Structure formats: structure tokens, C-alpha cells
Image (cartoon, rainbow, N blue to C red; front, side, top):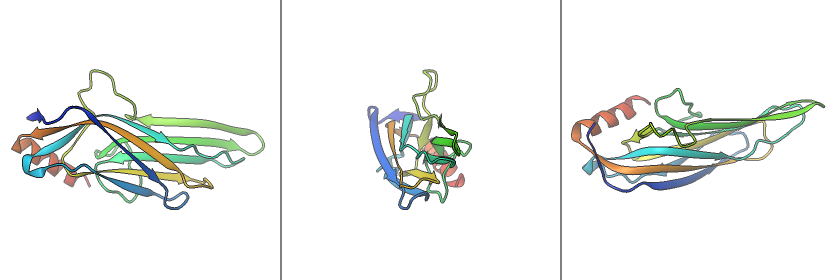
Length: 168
């Protein structure tokens, strides 16, 4: 793969808040890539921080978030090729007994040292989305992305763009 460094590693931060309680909400992150120079974004690590689900006696609550390379109408999951990271936090509760909190993450922490990168984005945007379940207040999620701008050769750039667009 022909990639040439165009910047040092830098971070991008973003947040998204549910527009209505327990409703899928997506925030677009503009990468300002230069397609004339075949510029791509190489992502090395992603950290997602979720707002806490609420403890409601006898109700299972949840907050989920995902970072994707494509705009979606529902939350992406790690089995989809354009999903770069996802995280969820939930509270399982039995009435009058109490609740137990759970947290799940996929590539939302720095990967092991033998992984060169976790994703390459050739189109101009990333999308960060949140979706809560059975909470009484709107929830917020935050993301930090460690990345670098690189220049791809023509064949690599073409393949990356085509792969992203066909994955939708």
C-alpha cells in the first residue's frame, strides 16, 4: 500500500448528545481532507467515553455509541466494515433486588503495539453517534481519535474510496 506521511500524529475530539431521550443521534466530524492530493486519514486509536445509563429499579437501561466512516440511520456495530469503534454501558436491574452495571468496548482503547493502525478513511467525514435505551434524560458521548494525514498513491486512494462508498 502506497502511503506517505503528510502530518504528525494529532487528535480529533467530538461529542454527541441525544436530540431526544433514547433517540439515535449522529454528529458529523468534518476531516477537511484534500481529495486532489489523495489525502487520507489513518486512525491509530479511538477512545469513547459514555454518559452513564440511569439506575431505575426493575428497568434495564443502556447507552451505546459508535464511530463510523459512513452516515447511518441506526447505530453501527463492529461487525460492519465502516465501524471503527463502538462502546456500550448498561445497567441490568431486577425490581426490589438491585442492579449490576456492564461496560463493553471494541477498539475504543489503544490497540496492541503490533497493530499498525485500526482504520483508514478516504472520504471527508467521520460520524459519531449515540443511542440510549430506557433512560429518563438525554445522554452524551465523547470521542478522542488519534490519527495522521497521509498521501496515498492513485491506485491505493481509488481502492480506499471505492471500498468506503460500496460498504454503505
